[in-house]
Image (cartoon, rainbow, N blue to C red):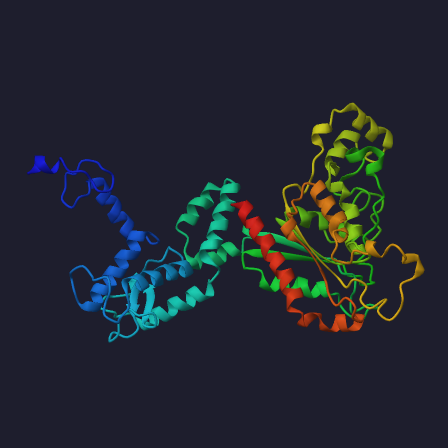
Length: 458
């Protein structure tokens, strides 16, 4: 008989079978392991079978359907749903709320296996404590761990990679506190209006920035840079002096050496250095630009900031320049000689390269400027050139500079909307919080930016 059995093939791997049951020893071991591992097909079916056997009081194999008391298929679906919610590091066990009914959708709950003491005798107090703990740490468990593993792999942090293999929900809060593991989004609020100054009201974009901070997942850190004009000197962005025209990145340095420490202009207020904008941009994984449309372009605040970010594009760092020029970093003779020599060409770099950005702009197309008045004669023959606030011209300058500096701006991360064209300015300003399309459009773009970053981290 033993010799005859050796002539059979394993139904799974086609190797010779030397045991009963139609599977070889190796495949049986694999099956036993899979039944114990949460998230596998075999484990889900084993849990469903065990639960239905308990329901019928049987010790034999369960039937596929139990009369009117929940099906094997629906039970497997509930098991999968529970593991998706709670993660796969807690072994769950199906339990009935009422023992007089079966495993229907309304009567089934998934509890930790260690709390299910058989015959549906679950310790209710321990179950309540477990649920409170899960609720407290409900952080889109699997998605968050996937991002952490990807970030750890990217940073070659093998110790963290190993620790994540056995991660428990209660450990997440400690990891969340580690800023270096969070995805960092810098939201640049470019609206210039501030209720503390003559406009009397905050810009709409400040409201949108607050909303983005509110909806961000716990594993995302949102850093808001407010460019509104406050009138107290803290909002001043000094104008770019155009050093790049002297000898390119050999005279213009990262992080802008025209202002800030050791520049000779330390006493001048400058938001770019005072609020450490360059450092914050370096630390960000993504940048979200929010801007009203001012004369078919971005706001003056964002324009000033972007002019000062010319130093991010193919330049030396300030420290490299000091080493080359012996601290005389703004001497045109030295910087031009360095450029012409070609010796330091390999040091030039895009300092923000590889990051992702999204652009959300809103305009009113001129509102009701000429609703009750005729267009000026100077516009005769040029009406078609008024493309409106939703035209490509509104964002093209900003997006071109970002892309030219190595920052990715996919077309689906650009959105320009026009609100209340033809209506008066006051109505437009008073009703924007009720405009769900306007708010949802911005939040959708924010979520798309986050998904794009997550995808590329992985």
